[in-house]
Each structure stands twice: as structure tokens, then as C-alpha cells.
Length: 477
Image (cartoon, rainbow, N blue to C red; front, top):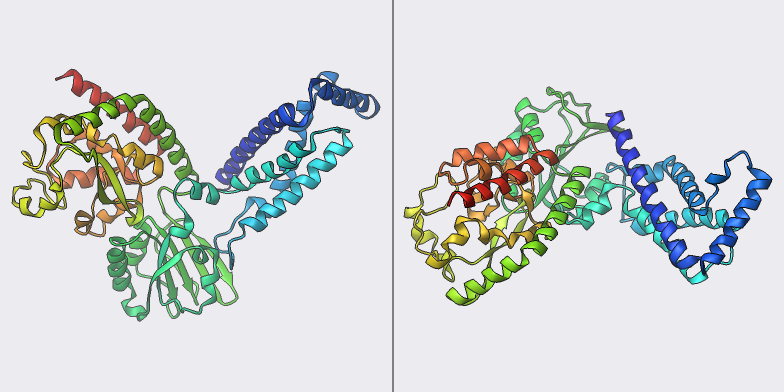
């Protein structure tokens, strides 16, 4: 685990070194140095200092760009040696959001260092206006990439929009000032005897999971030094964040990774089995956004043609918005090209007897609501293309379990609720294997298989197989 963390810090260090070096060199060359002659005069100052102080360094290495790269490297080494920059503890006590305070600290650290360095190496005569702008720019980059939290917020998963449910946690408890709780919203606070705790947790979490975006479970224990194996396994398999506060030291029957702290006479146990969180979530979102934007641009002529066709066949609207359930129960409006007559979804209950799907699924073989001239859009999944906008927004991913209606989700059992712990997708294992299956058990099999084996490599593999499946389907027609 330590090697993994060191590797993570190293990758972030290299990224920051590269990014800040490129921005600094380009900013100085294009804005801060007055002209090429000015830059050359600064270089002559460096050569003069080289002759006096460090002539043991080969002259070929004495460049202004090389100096900036070295200065940034030294600064990052100093910065990474501090816990302030490298470590954000979710179990710290925090009473407010400190992004502004953190930015000001980084601003002072960076500028005291860089301005002093410019003076020492006689880099003078600079454009003062652009230099002031530069002093604000680099601390912003340092703050953005300090940890995953800010990037996750920018990529569509704000911590302040996450919710938690608590069991036996006093409303005035100082534990509510823990960072992990202070930035999230408490949706339900339940008081119950510890002898009935297991059944209550399972019942309430499953119910709340179907109605709100639930991310964290908080449990306060007073008299127990253990929890049942069944409850332990349930919490582990939830694929959510779990915080247990106990007056006694706990013993767990399962072998899993968790953090333990002791504050005065209280023990804090925390584990995060959220599948798509942190660096993995950031990489997945970057991949989703990049590919989706490229596809939107490339497919824009096709999107326009389909829009004109729908208007020609059945007038407007061109797209429909359907409320679906996404990551951790978050509801969102999924966009599709309209292939049914207006208000057809309202007739779903009337046509329930024609539904051939099993379990919480609804699909009719010869659906009378579908506009005949637009059936081919559904056949080749062209009606799903507007969901690329849902992907860019962050409600969906290119790959994941298909998002279902709230009425369907309400029929999930506690095991199948796990499908809500990953971003819903436009395609997935089901779509590349048994797309038209009527058996809900097969849906369940592929969804759980995806959740338990999720990785960026698996996403890429599914995407490539999806394009291949579409190509083969078109070639076979």
C-alpha cells in the first residue's frame, strides 16, 4: 500500500513539474520578457554568474528554460516535504471550507520563492503587469492538483452534493465536525437500540438508496465491541463509504482494508469501497469527456440529419428527457432522440400486460408507441447518441450498466442495488454480449460482473467491442 501511495505521489509530482514548467517557460517567453533581446541579456547574466560561482556545470546546461525547470523542481521538493500539501485527511476536524485559506498559503509560498529566485539570478526588467498575473496563476494550478477533491468537484461529483445517513449519532456530537461529515448533508438520523441495529441499517439504507444520492453510512456504537458478520459483509459489499464511531475497540471477522484512529476515548473506523472514486474516477471522467466531445464533433452531421428526419416524420420535439437513476441513486434527465409518439411513456402502465421482460424491466416486442418510420433509429441504437451530452455533463459514462427508471429501481433487492455504485453507461457488458435478452437474470449477471471487475482497461475493451459489434451488425444487414 505504501508503494502504491508513493507511486501516486510520484505521478502527480511529474505531472506538476511538467505542467508548471511548460506554463512558466511559455508565459515568460510570450509575455514577461519584453523581447528576444531582453531574454538574451538575461541569459548573459546567467553566463556571468556561471563563470563566477558554478563553472563546474557544463555551459550547455546553462539556459533560462533550464533554470526555470530547476527552480520549479526544487520548489516542488520543498512543497512535497510538507504535510500541508501532500495530505488531506478526511478524518480531520474541519469547521468550514478552507480552499481560500489554502490558496493564500500557496500564493505566499510560491511568490516568496519565485520572486526571491528572480532577484538572485538577476532576471530583471520584466513586464510587471504580466508578472503579477503569473503570480496568481501558478498557485491556482498547485491548488487544483493538490489532491483529488477539487478535480472531482470540477468533473461533476461535488462532495457538498453528497449525502449520508447516521445511526445513533447525537445531533450535537463533535464528530459531525469531521471533514468527511462537515462537507456532506445528513439526510436521515436514526436512533435505535444496538440489538436491532443490523436489521435497521439494512432496511433504512436500502430504502434511502432508492430515493436519494446516498454516499456515506455513519454508525455510532456505545456498548458493542463487535458487529455481526452479516452486517460487516453488507457494509463491505455496499460499495460506499462507511464510518463507524465506537466507545470500544472493535474486532472484525473479515479481512479488509480500513483506517483506525483513536481520539480520546473514542475509536474511529473508516473504509471506502466506493468503486469509482478518487484518481480512478478522474481518469474515467477525462476519458469519457474526451471521447464524447470527439464523437459529438465527428457525428454532428448525422445528429442534424436525424433531427431533421424526426421533425419531418412527426414534427417536434426532436429529443425526449426521461428521469433515470444514476450514480448512488442520483436522478438525472437522460436525453434520447424521440422515436415514439408524444407522451407515449405515460401509456406504459396500460401496456404492462404486453411486457415480455422479466424482473424490473419493460420492453414490448412490437411496441405500438414507436413511430414506424423511426424504428431503424432504435435498431441501430442511433436514438441513444444524444446521451453523449449526458456523458459530458457527468450524469453518465460511455460504459456502465444502463440507467433505468425510478419505478424499475424500486424493485431492486439489496444485492442488485450495487449497480447504482458505478456511473450508468451508454454501453456495457450486456450490450456487447446479449443485447436483446428478455431475461433479467442475465442483466443482473453482466451488471454485477462489470461492478466486481471494473477498470479503465475493461471500459476501453467494451468500447472497442461495441464499435466492432455495430460494424458487424451493419455489415450483416
